[in-house]
Image (tube, rainbow, N blue to C red):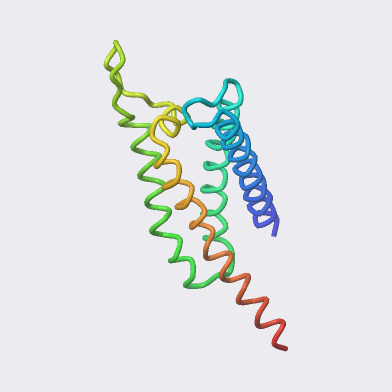
Length: 148
């Protein structure tokens, strides 16, 4: 089925982009000695890759949860998908309050996850948990196949 191949390819691209972003952003912070001391343009490149990887992984993971034959396991993806959806909606609609001169909220997701790093950890964990039904179903199929 071509839609499954597209979904798997999109998920793979999302996961690779997510890993690359984590390596670049984390590496630049590690080299600088602190998250807030990381040098430009490396932290910016890493955060951009992280945001793109988070979006691709969440979307294609959710699509695969719907179209793959995982049965009732797909219900495992509902709570993390709600968390991810609510966080993205909050960031894009409400934004993060700022103390800048203009008094406007910040809507750039890269700036938000840079400014509040624990939100990066939450959205990263929830995004990866969206793929949990796919992993569990794959492990269950492989254990049944190896038992034969």
